Length: 108
Image (cartoon, rainbow, N blue to C red; front, side, top):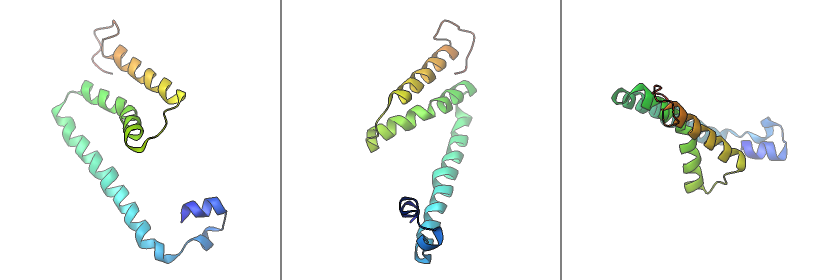
């Protein structure tokens, strides 16, 4: 209903119908508890088993994983800006991890 509100430019009071409320509340609850809460808890529990450098690398590479999954599963297009950003992230991780000639750093 929000999509139709913005595409048709109706006042929100005209677009909102109480019959949609349970569905919207359920989606918000799922998004908050499962997509965000469970994922954050899982990540925190898993971080106990890896080093801080590895955790930094994983969190830094998260936008790349999201882009790869969106490209593969949702058939999203990857533009030049996204490709350049990915290259910068990978370059920074390689330089920060010591593979770029500077070997005393152990973080991404």
